[in-house]
Length: 417
Image (cartoon, rainbow, N blue to C red; front, side, top):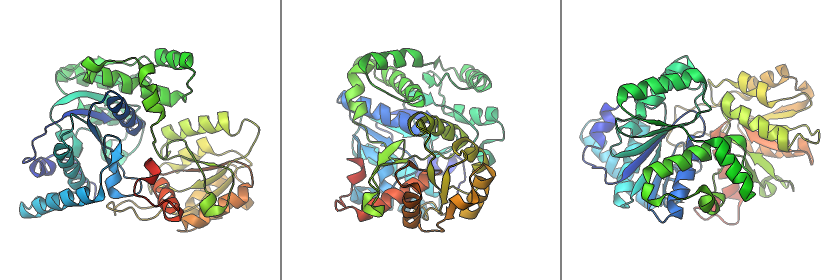
Protein backbone atom coordinates (compact mmCIF):
# COMPACT_ATOMS: atom_id res chain seq x y z
CA UNK A 1 0.00 0.00 0.00
CA UNK A 2 0.97 3.64 -0.44
CA UNK A 3 -0.10 5.67 2.61
CA UNK A 4 1.84 8.89 2.97
CA UNK A 5 2.48 10.38 6.42
CA UNK A 6 5.19 10.73 9.04
CA UNK A 7 3.48 9.47 12.21
CA UNK A 8 4.11 5.74 11.76
CA UNK A 9 7.70 6.04 10.53
CA UNK A 10 8.38 8.49 13.37
CA UNK A 11 7.34 5.87 15.91
CA UNK A 12 9.25 3.17 14.06
CA UNK A 13 12.61 4.99 14.18
CA UNK A 14 12.29 6.80 17.51
CA UNK A 15 14.71 4.31 19.09
CA UNK A 16 17.19 4.73 16.20
CA UNK A 17 19.08 7.99 16.75
CA UNK A 18 20.58 9.18 13.48
CA UNK A 19 24.38 9.03 13.72
CA UNK A 20 25.16 10.25 10.18
CA UNK A 21 24.70 13.43 8.15
CA UNK A 22 22.01 13.29 5.49
CA UNK A 23 21.90 14.44 1.87
CA UNK A 24 18.22 14.31 0.88
CA UNK A 25 17.18 14.25 -2.79
CA UNK A 26 13.67 14.77 -4.20
CA UNK A 27 12.33 15.24 -7.73
CA UNK A 28 10.45 13.46 -10.49
CA UNK A 29 13.40 12.53 -12.69
CA UNK A 30 17.13 12.30 -12.09
CA UNK A 31 17.05 11.96 -8.31
CA UNK A 32 18.39 8.42 -8.32
CA UNK A 33 21.23 9.40 -10.66
CA UNK A 34 22.05 12.42 -8.49
CA UNK A 35 22.24 10.13 -5.45
CA UNK A 36 24.58 7.80 -7.35
CA UNK A 37 26.81 10.68 -8.47
CA UNK A 38 27.03 12.17 -4.96
CA UNK A 39 27.88 8.77 -3.49
CA UNK A 40 30.63 8.29 -6.08
CA UNK A 41 32.08 11.71 -5.20
CA UNK A 42 32.06 10.92 -1.49
CA UNK A 43 33.74 7.57 -2.13
CA UNK A 44 36.35 9.24 -4.35
CA UNK A 45 37.37 11.46 -1.42
CA UNK A 46 37.52 8.53 1.00
CA UNK A 47 34.36 9.54 2.89
CA UNK A 48 32.28 6.63 4.17
CA UNK A 49 28.72 6.84 2.92
CA UNK A 50 25.54 4.86 2.46
CA UNK A 51 22.85 5.24 -0.20
CA UNK A 52 19.14 4.46 -0.11
CA UNK A 53 17.26 4.60 -3.42
CA UNK A 54 14.04 3.06 -4.63
CA UNK A 55 12.73 0.90 -6.13
CA UNK A 56 15.16 -1.99 -5.84
CA UNK A 57 16.33 -3.50 -9.11
CA UNK A 58 16.93 -7.23 -8.63
CA UNK A 59 16.85 -8.03 -4.91
CA UNK A 60 15.00 -6.07 -2.22
CA UNK A 61 18.27 -5.25 -0.47
CA UNK A 62 20.05 -3.74 -3.49
CA UNK A 63 18.29 -0.43 -2.80
CA UNK A 64 20.69 0.02 0.14
CA UNK A 65 24.39 0.45 -0.63
CA UNK A 66 27.39 0.94 1.64
CA UNK A 67 30.36 2.64 -0.02
CA UNK A 68 29.02 1.78 -3.46
CA UNK A 69 28.21 -1.89 -2.84
CA UNK A 70 24.76 -3.34 -2.13
CA UNK A 71 24.32 -4.37 1.48
CA UNK A 72 24.54 -8.10 2.18
CA UNK A 73 21.36 -10.13 2.18
CA UNK A 74 22.09 -11.47 5.67
CA UNK A 75 22.49 -8.02 7.25
CA UNK A 76 19.41 -6.70 5.47
CA UNK A 77 17.20 -9.59 6.58
CA UNK A 78 18.50 -9.43 10.16
CA UNK A 79 17.74 -5.70 10.51
CA UNK A 80 14.45 -5.97 8.63
CA UNK A 81 13.32 -8.72 11.00
CA UNK A 82 14.02 -6.50 14.01
CA UNK A 83 12.19 -3.54 12.44
CA UNK A 84 9.16 -5.71 11.66
CA UNK A 85 9.14 -7.07 15.21
CA UNK A 86 9.13 -3.50 16.51
CA UNK A 87 6.26 -2.65 14.17
CA UNK A 88 4.19 -5.55 15.53
CA UNK A 89 5.11 -5.19 19.20
CA UNK A 90 4.26 -1.47 19.22
CA UNK A 91 1.17 -1.95 17.03
CA UNK A 92 2.37 0.68 14.55
CA UNK A 93 0.97 -0.73 11.31
CA UNK A 94 3.75 0.68 9.12
CA UNK A 95 3.61 0.45 5.33
CA UNK A 96 6.09 -1.62 3.34
CA UNK A 97 8.09 1.46 2.36
CA UNK A 98 8.16 2.73 5.94
CA UNK A 99 9.55 -0.63 7.08
CA UNK A 100 12.16 -0.47 4.31
CA UNK A 101 13.13 3.11 5.21
CA UNK A 102 13.55 2.23 8.89
CA UNK A 103 15.64 -0.78 7.87
CA UNK A 104 17.88 1.41 5.72
CA UNK A 105 18.40 4.00 8.47
CA UNK A 106 19.23 1.30 11.03
CA UNK A 107 21.78 -0.24 8.64
CA UNK A 108 23.35 3.19 8.08
CA UNK A 109 23.81 3.47 11.85
CA UNK A 110 25.27 0.00 12.20
CA UNK A 111 27.77 0.60 9.42
CA UNK A 112 28.89 3.83 11.12
CA UNK A 113 28.92 5.84 7.89
CA UNK A 114 29.61 9.56 7.89
CA UNK A 115 27.01 10.45 5.25
CA UNK A 116 23.72 8.95 4.13
CA UNK A 117 22.51 9.84 0.63
CA UNK A 118 18.74 9.32 0.62
CA UNK A 119 16.32 9.43 -2.30
CA UNK A 120 12.73 10.39 -1.57
CA UNK A 121 10.33 7.54 -2.28
CA UNK A 122 7.26 9.56 -3.32
CA UNK A 123 6.76 13.31 -3.15
CA UNK A 124 8.72 14.73 -0.26
CA UNK A 125 6.72 16.48 2.45
CA UNK A 126 4.97 13.34 3.72
CA UNK A 127 7.44 10.76 2.45
CA UNK A 128 8.87 8.39 5.06
CA UNK A 129 12.40 9.59 4.33
CA UNK A 130 11.45 13.12 5.43
CA UNK A 131 11.89 12.11 9.07
CA UNK A 132 15.61 12.63 8.46
CA UNK A 133 17.54 14.71 10.97
CA UNK A 134 20.92 16.41 10.48
CA UNK A 135 20.38 17.28 6.83
CA UNK A 136 23.57 18.76 5.38
CA UNK A 137 21.99 19.70 2.07
CA UNK A 138 18.76 18.99 0.20
CA UNK A 139 18.43 18.61 -3.57
CA UNK A 140 15.42 19.02 -5.85
CA UNK A 141 15.91 17.62 -9.34
CA UNK A 142 13.73 17.99 -12.44
CA UNK A 143 10.01 18.01 -11.59
CA UNK A 144 7.26 16.77 -13.90
CA UNK A 145 3.78 15.32 -13.78
CA UNK A 146 3.78 11.90 -12.11
CA UNK A 147 1.89 10.24 -9.24
CA UNK A 148 -0.83 12.91 -9.50
CA UNK A 149 -3.29 10.87 -7.43
CA UNK A 150 -0.96 11.27 -4.43
CA UNK A 151 0.79 14.58 -5.04
CA UNK A 152 -1.66 16.86 -6.83
CA UNK A 153 -2.96 17.41 -10.34
CA UNK A 154 -0.77 20.37 -11.30
CA UNK A 155 2.98 20.63 -11.55
CA UNK A 156 2.90 23.47 -9.03
CA UNK A 157 1.10 21.31 -6.45
CA UNK A 158 3.65 18.55 -7.04
CA UNK A 159 6.52 21.03 -6.69
CA UNK A 160 5.21 22.11 -3.28
CA UNK A 161 5.21 18.49 -2.10
CA UNK A 162 8.80 18.04 -3.30
CA UNK A 163 9.83 21.30 -1.61
CA UNK A 164 8.67 19.82 1.69
CA UNK A 165 12.14 18.33 2.22
CA UNK A 166 13.62 21.83 2.63
CA UNK A 167 14.83 22.68 6.14
CA UNK A 168 15.61 25.94 7.88
CA UNK A 169 19.26 26.89 7.56
CA UNK A 170 20.05 23.97 5.24
CA UNK A 171 21.07 24.88 1.67
CA UNK A 172 18.88 23.45 -1.10
CA UNK A 173 20.26 22.74 -4.57
CA UNK A 174 17.60 23.14 -7.26
CA UNK A 175 17.79 22.12 -10.93
CA UNK A 176 17.41 25.49 -12.64
CA UNK A 177 16.04 23.93 -15.83
CA UNK A 178 12.69 23.42 -14.10
CA UNK A 179 9.88 25.52 -15.54
CA UNK A 180 9.42 28.98 -14.06
CA UNK A 181 6.22 28.22 -12.14
CA UNK A 182 7.96 25.30 -10.40
CA UNK A 183 10.93 27.46 -9.44
CA UNK A 184 8.59 30.13 -8.05
CA UNK A 185 6.86 27.58 -5.79
CA UNK A 186 10.19 26.27 -4.51
CA UNK A 187 11.59 29.77 -3.99
CA UNK A 188 8.52 30.84 -2.01
CA UNK A 189 8.63 27.75 0.20
CA UNK A 190 12.37 28.16 0.81
CA UNK A 191 11.78 31.79 1.82
CA UNK A 192 9.03 30.78 4.25
CA UNK A 193 11.20 27.97 5.66
CA UNK A 194 14.36 30.04 5.99
CA UNK A 195 16.58 28.12 3.58
CA UNK A 196 18.87 29.39 0.84
CA UNK A 197 18.53 28.07 -2.71
CA UNK A 198 21.57 27.22 -4.82
CA UNK A 199 21.38 26.73 -8.58
CA UNK A 200 24.07 24.66 -10.32
CA UNK A 201 25.74 26.08 -13.42
CA UNK A 202 25.12 23.31 -15.93
CA UNK A 203 26.64 25.35 -18.77
CA UNK A 204 29.94 25.66 -16.92
CA UNK A 205 29.87 21.94 -16.12
CA UNK A 206 29.24 21.11 -19.80
CA UNK A 207 32.22 23.26 -20.81
CA UNK A 208 34.41 21.62 -18.17
CA UNK A 209 33.40 18.16 -19.39
CA UNK A 210 34.05 19.12 -23.01
CA UNK A 211 37.57 20.30 -22.16
CA UNK A 212 38.27 16.99 -20.45
CA UNK A 213 37.01 15.07 -23.49
CA UNK A 214 34.20 13.38 -21.56
CA UNK A 215 30.76 12.92 -23.12
CA UNK A 216 27.51 13.07 -21.16
CA UNK A 217 23.91 13.42 -22.30
CA UNK A 218 22.19 16.80 -21.63
CA UNK A 219 20.05 15.49 -18.76
CA UNK A 220 23.10 13.75 -17.26
CA UNK A 221 24.95 17.07 -17.26
CA UNK A 222 22.08 18.70 -15.35
CA UNK A 223 22.14 15.90 -12.78
CA UNK A 224 25.92 15.92 -12.52
CA UNK A 225 25.96 19.69 -11.97
CA UNK A 226 23.40 19.38 -9.17
CA UNK A 227 25.29 16.49 -7.58
CA UNK A 228 28.64 18.31 -7.63
CA UNK A 229 27.20 21.46 -6.08
CA UNK A 230 25.46 19.38 -3.38
CA UNK A 231 28.71 17.55 -2.65
CA UNK A 232 30.62 20.84 -2.30
CA UNK A 233 27.98 22.28 0.04
CA UNK A 234 27.80 19.12 2.17
CA UNK A 235 31.57 18.65 2.38
CA UNK A 236 33.27 22.03 1.97
CA UNK A 237 36.43 20.68 3.58
CA UNK A 238 36.67 18.12 0.74
CA UNK A 239 35.88 20.55 -2.08
CA UNK A 240 37.33 19.31 -5.36
CA UNK A 241 36.99 20.28 -9.03
CA UNK A 242 34.65 18.08 -11.00
CA UNK A 243 37.45 16.90 -13.30
CA UNK A 244 39.26 15.30 -10.34
CA UNK A 245 36.11 13.32 -9.51
CA UNK A 246 35.35 12.15 -13.05
CA UNK A 247 37.31 8.87 -12.85
CA UNK A 248 35.06 7.72 -9.98
CA UNK A 249 31.95 8.93 -11.81
CA UNK A 250 32.89 7.16 -15.05
CA UNK A 251 33.32 3.91 -13.12
CA UNK A 252 29.81 4.23 -11.71
CA UNK A 253 27.42 1.45 -12.67
CA UNK A 254 23.81 2.63 -12.65
CA UNK A 255 21.70 -0.14 -14.21
CA UNK A 256 18.68 0.73 -16.32
CA UNK A 257 19.75 4.27 -17.17
CA UNK A 258 20.82 4.37 -20.84
CA UNK A 259 22.50 1.03 -20.18
CA UNK A 260 24.01 -0.79 -23.13
CA UNK A 261 23.90 -4.51 -22.52
CA UNK A 262 24.08 -7.90 -24.18
CA UNK A 263 21.12 -10.27 -24.46
CA UNK A 264 23.20 -12.98 -26.08
CA UNK A 265 22.74 -15.39 -23.15
CA UNK A 266 18.97 -15.04 -23.47
CA UNK A 267 18.22 -14.51 -27.17
CA UNK A 268 21.47 -15.19 -29.04
CA UNK A 269 21.47 -11.61 -30.34
CA UNK A 270 25.00 -10.41 -31.11
CA UNK A 271 24.36 -6.67 -30.98
CA UNK A 272 23.91 -4.82 -27.69
CA UNK A 273 20.51 -3.44 -26.73
CA UNK A 274 19.63 -0.29 -24.80
CA UNK A 275 17.91 -0.69 -21.41
CA UNK A 276 16.30 2.37 -19.85
CA UNK A 277 13.72 2.80 -17.09
CA UNK A 278 11.96 5.82 -18.66
CA UNK A 279 8.43 5.72 -17.22
CA UNK A 280 7.01 9.24 -17.53
CA UNK A 281 6.91 11.87 -20.24
CA UNK A 282 9.93 13.77 -18.96
CA UNK A 283 12.21 10.74 -18.84
CA UNK A 284 10.76 9.54 -22.16
CA UNK A 285 11.74 12.87 -23.70
CA UNK A 286 15.34 12.36 -22.54
CA UNK A 287 15.36 8.79 -23.87
CA UNK A 288 13.84 9.89 -27.18
CA UNK A 289 16.58 12.50 -27.59
CA UNK A 290 19.27 9.91 -26.96
CA UNK A 291 17.70 7.44 -29.41
CA UNK A 292 17.35 10.16 -32.05
CA UNK A 293 21.00 11.20 -31.74
CA UNK A 294 22.59 7.78 -31.42
CA UNK A 295 20.29 5.10 -32.86
CA UNK A 296 18.07 6.74 -35.48
CA UNK A 297 20.86 8.83 -37.00
CA UNK A 298 21.27 6.44 -39.96
CA UNK A 299 17.52 6.18 -40.51
CA UNK A 300 17.11 2.98 -38.50
CA UNK A 301 13.64 2.13 -37.19
CA UNK A 302 13.62 1.01 -33.56
CA UNK A 303 12.24 -2.21 -32.13
CA UNK A 304 10.85 -1.48 -28.69
CA UNK A 305 10.24 -3.96 -25.86
CA UNK A 306 7.83 -2.13 -23.57
CA UNK A 307 6.00 -2.56 -20.28
CA UNK A 308 4.29 -0.06 -18.03
CA UNK A 309 2.72 0.37 -14.63
CA UNK A 310 -1.05 0.82 -14.59
CA UNK A 311 -2.02 4.48 -14.49
CA UNK A 312 1.07 5.85 -16.23
CA UNK A 313 0.62 8.30 -19.12
CA UNK A 314 1.60 5.80 -21.78
CA UNK A 315 -0.12 7.81 -24.48
CA UNK A 316 2.20 10.72 -23.71
CA UNK A 317 5.22 8.46 -23.38
CA UNK A 318 4.63 6.60 -26.65
CA UNK A 319 3.97 9.85 -28.51
CA UNK A 320 7.57 10.80 -27.68
CA UNK A 321 9.21 7.43 -28.31
CA UNK A 322 7.52 5.94 -31.35
CA UNK A 323 7.83 6.77 -35.05
CA UNK A 324 6.28 5.16 -38.15
CA UNK A 325 8.33 2.13 -39.14
CA UNK A 326 9.10 1.17 -35.54
CA UNK A 327 8.16 -2.23 -34.12
CA UNK A 328 6.75 -2.85 -30.65
CA UNK A 329 6.70 -5.88 -28.36
CA UNK A 330 4.66 -5.40 -25.18
CA UNK A 331 4.80 -7.49 -22.00
CA UNK A 332 3.76 -7.47 -18.36
CA UNK A 333 6.67 -7.14 -15.94
CA UNK A 334 6.92 -9.68 -13.12
CA UNK A 335 5.26 -9.07 -9.72
CA UNK A 336 7.41 -6.71 -7.66
CA UNK A 337 8.80 -8.22 -4.46
CA UNK A 338 7.70 -6.16 -1.46
CA UNK A 339 5.44 -3.91 -3.55
CA UNK A 340 2.22 -5.88 -4.16
CA UNK A 341 0.25 -2.74 -5.03
CA UNK A 342 2.29 -2.21 -8.24
CA UNK A 343 0.36 -3.63 -11.20
CA UNK A 344 1.54 -3.98 -14.78
CA UNK A 345 -0.49 -2.50 -17.64
CA UNK A 346 -2.20 -4.81 -20.14
CA UNK A 347 0.15 -5.38 -23.13
CA UNK A 348 -2.84 -5.15 -25.48
CA UNK A 349 -3.52 -1.60 -24.30
CA UNK A 350 0.09 -0.64 -25.01
CA UNK A 351 -0.09 -2.13 -28.50
CA UNK A 352 -3.38 -0.36 -29.25
CA UNK A 353 -1.70 2.92 -28.32
CA UNK A 354 1.35 2.03 -30.42
CA UNK A 355 -0.78 1.62 -33.54
CA UNK A 356 -2.43 4.96 -32.81
CA UNK A 357 1.05 6.50 -32.93
CA UNK A 358 1.91 5.19 -36.36
CA UNK A 359 3.19 1.67 -35.73
CA UNK A 360 1.81 -0.78 -38.27
CA UNK A 361 -0.52 -3.48 -36.98
CA UNK A 362 1.78 -6.11 -38.49
CA UNK A 363 4.70 -4.77 -36.44
CA UNK A 364 3.33 -5.34 -32.94
CA UNK A 365 3.45 -8.41 -30.71
CA UNK A 366 2.12 -9.25 -27.25
CA UNK A 367 4.34 -11.46 -25.10
CA UNK A 368 1.75 -11.62 -22.34
CA UNK A 369 3.58 -12.19 -19.04
CA UNK A 370 6.67 -13.79 -20.58
CA UNK A 371 9.61 -11.36 -20.44
CA UNK A 372 12.00 -13.87 -22.03
CA UNK A 373 9.60 -14.28 -24.96
CA UNK A 374 9.38 -10.50 -25.30
CA UNK A 375 13.16 -10.14 -25.53
CA UNK A 376 13.46 -13.06 -27.95
CA UNK A 377 10.70 -11.74 -30.21
CA UNK A 378 12.10 -8.20 -30.17
CA UNK A 379 15.53 -9.56 -31.16
CA UNK A 380 14.00 -11.60 -34.01
CA UNK A 381 11.92 -8.69 -35.30
CA UNK A 382 14.85 -6.25 -35.17
CA UNK A 383 17.48 -8.36 -36.88
CA UNK A 384 20.60 -6.20 -36.72
CA UNK A 385 18.65 -2.98 -36.14
CA UNK A 386 18.46 -1.30 -32.70
CA UNK A 387 16.44 -2.73 -29.80
CA UNK A 388 15.38 -0.52 -26.89
CA UNK A 389 13.79 -1.88 -23.69
CA UNK A 390 11.85 0.80 -21.79
CA UNK A 391 8.64 1.95 -20.11
CA UNK A 392 9.21 0.87 -16.52
CA UNK A 393 11.93 0.37 -13.93
CA UNK A 394 10.07 -2.81 -13.02
CA UNK A 395 10.69 -4.11 -16.54
CA UNK A 396 14.36 -3.22 -16.02
CA UNK A 397 14.23 -5.36 -12.87
CA UNK A 398 12.67 -8.28 -14.73
CA UNK A 399 15.32 -8.12 -17.47
CA UNK A 400 18.24 -7.88 -15.04
CA UNK A 401 16.86 -10.74 -12.96
CA UNK A 402 16.50 -12.88 -16.07
CA UNK A 403 20.05 -12.06 -17.12
CA UNK A 404 21.38 -13.04 -13.71
CA UNK A 405 19.56 -16.35 -13.86
CA UNK A 406 21.04 -17.04 -17.29
CA UNK A 407 24.52 -15.82 -16.50
CA UNK A 408 27.28 -18.24 -15.68
CA UNK A 409 28.43 -15.73 -13.09
CA UNK A 410 25.51 -15.79 -10.67
CA UNK A 411 27.31 -13.94 -7.90
CA UNK A 412 25.16 -11.67 -5.79
CA UNK A 413 26.53 -8.38 -7.08
CA UNK A 414 27.18 -9.32 -10.70
CA UNK A 415 25.15 -6.49 -12.27
CA UNK A 416 26.78 -3.86 -10.07
CA UNK A 417 30.39 -4.88 -10.51
